Image 1: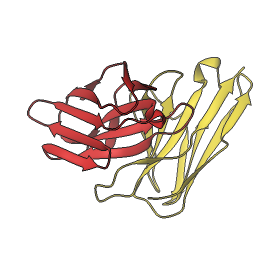
Image 2: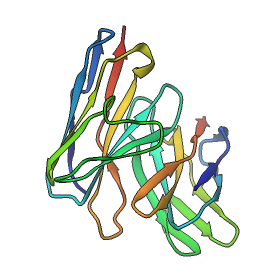
Image 3: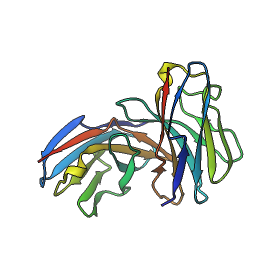
Amino acid sequence: SAVISQKPSRDICQRGTSLTIQCQVDSQVTMMFWYRQQPGQSLTLIATANQGSEATYESGFVIDKFPISRPNLTFSTLTVSNMSPEDSSIYLCSVAPGGGQPQHFGDGTRLSIL
Amino acid sequence: GQNIDQPTEMTATEGAIVQINCTYQTSGFNGLFWYQQHAGEAPTFLSYNVLDGLEEKGRFSSFLSRSKGYSYLLLKELQMKDSASYLCAGFNDYKLSFGAGTTVTVRA
């Protein structure tokens, strides 16, 4: 399966600042996704990162808060903007190579907002 | 849409068998995935069912009945390292919708 590198692995940020998380894959993949996992909860899909066009956001998530880039088939970024303590969570990148192959996850970014 | 339900917690003894059930309501359903997540780590893929029946992968097996909206993950010969959260996820088009996860605790 694809090797996914996500960074930073963790960060502690101040309220009101923004943080950009990077996801790099060692091979070209059709689909890339961003998830959030709040403490003690399961994964919630934030958006699908589309190569060359705007991301597709799920209900409850908006571009102004979570801008996403995907300049090519191996790289994507998620920015968490104007952070508040409620954004403290694990953010995970996943990829689906296509052809019915399962999604695989990066190691995640553990974000704490003070 | 998809509503994924699975038990919150299960406890079993080392060497035993545990079955984690998952029920779902879906439209446009394509398949069902099982992931394992150890505390503090990312989920790792375990198994995928798209057709009715049993998929066996070593100590782990997964079953699907599409007509009943039901799946289970079977863990055999439990080991201490199997203590983790097990996530059931419905696959709709290209997206996964996750259940809340079942925390399995394996006791010696």
